[in-house]
Image (cartoon, rainbow, N blue to C red; front, side):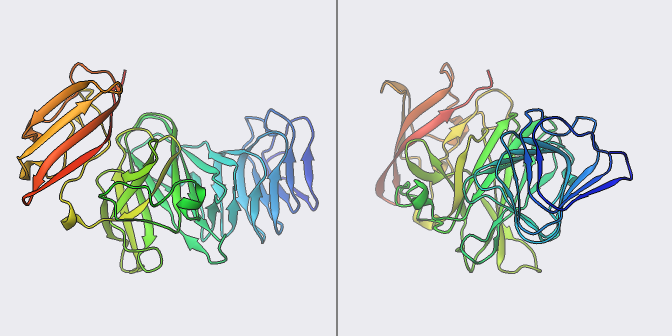
Length: 369
């Protein structure tokens, strides 16, 4: 199809075998199916595919790799098979329900994605992936209508460098407990875990440090102040230092909560929580990276310097002691010297306001080998 040519298809389109070289516009009112493993479109294609009908589904036995994809018409557009978009994705005002499939936007430009009021839903744990190569904001316009009431909970991700990454997010508008992440299983310093929804984060390629920014409605969701994540040992714990701020005067009920991940996430469950800082001044995070880059090279424990009557013990996976310190402080924090990367167990005994407290859990030592 040459540039300037439009092909209007008013029924379903099935690509049984073969490829399309598209420079013009392909407008489809029915459903799309691709059964060719090459992805349907030739690599040189620069044209646009517009879904102009009512409810439409992208399916087939093989992934489709669209050059440019536009959602128009009415109704909901759905994924029945994985799909990639090579250059630009325009949601306009439509819902793209990826359900349990994956949608990947291959272009690294931040403006490769556009929308007005459109959004991506992923209630069946599908992922929307974006490719990044710059320290800029990449938006993930996530939302859901599964309960009958529309909620919009976008996420912005920013890498700390200009290296290549592939970052995926899934927004699941369901109680985490119903999906296997029991809200009752949590560290003692986590008061209440969001019961409405959770996210899954997946940095499947790249090692850049990422800053995540989540939006929430304090009136309908809860007035949260901490990000928490589910760990392999089966409980919710603080994901890292969380910063909360208003989203702006135009949305007074919305807040933004950010945190910086210390390591790439691998399909990591995340959600918001409320903690009462005055109840427990000690904050313990679950990883550090003593690789000599000047970032997170030692295991810092927030506010531990205020309580010098303490003793810290670190054990390896076999229960052997690998580190012990009395009056542990951040000026002389544990750097993991001589130890290999992996998961260790910590036991911290500390006196706070004349009360003896015990903290215990797991810490991951990361190295870029």
